[in-house]
Amino acid sequence: MDIKVEHFPEKNRFEAHFEDNQVAFVEYALNNNVFDILHTIVPSSLEGQGIAGQIVKTAYAYAKSKGYDLRGSCSYANVWLKRHPL
View (cartoon, rainbow, N blue to C red):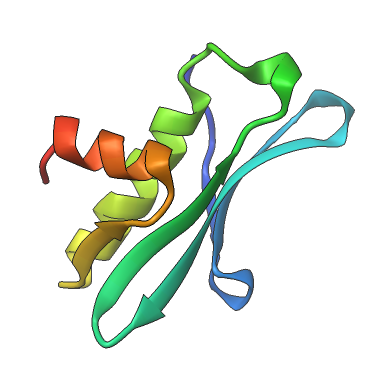
């Protein structure tokens, strides 16, 4: 599934919107040049479609392009980062 991921810096989030007003997102913190994904949320009806991975990938690609150090306080993001070093 190819999804559109949008960055909302005012909310420190990357989001993907789906039918029925469902939203999947990652929430991050940016401190001292460290981009840290805190939460990865996908509605249960959308799980298992690779959505979390695509949003996390987009968020980390953005952070890397800005020269930030990458961190994953969220367990999903932490494992993703270890499996997909950027």
